[in-house]
Length: 195
Figure (tube, rainbow, N blue to C red):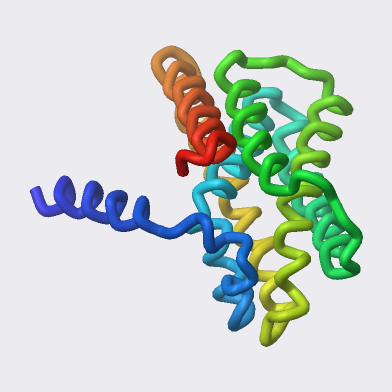
């Protein structure tokens, strides 16, 4: 009985995290742990990054590993653009759209060719990286923060892959597609300014 109460309480507490702070520059304060926590507690990032893992797992090999490797690699390039103050238009919109589009890809079981999936994931990674690259110069330890952020991103990709692997076939496949629908709804809420 205690576990049933603890999980909803934890989820309720996590849902009160102020996502608007995600791109304000204040999140990059103390280094690795701050960087690790940022994607894990920023629902805009959770949605998109779990979707990358889910979609990669759905597409199978080699996408199951290519997409989760491509995302942080291109995200680092986006971060470099942010650090260099190279403008990227509509960053917040791109982040929200990443959850909408990737969630829909999971929901509708889109079988895109690997190159197209990688380009799509990489494009969205630029927005995620740029948002945080603009924060890095103000961080106490920007390299540690970036390492933590990449590690957190990887953990979220692995969570998506793990859930998809655990939920193979039958009702599990329905659960994965339902996750895609939920991710797309979360992205839509961010896109419309409701979250």
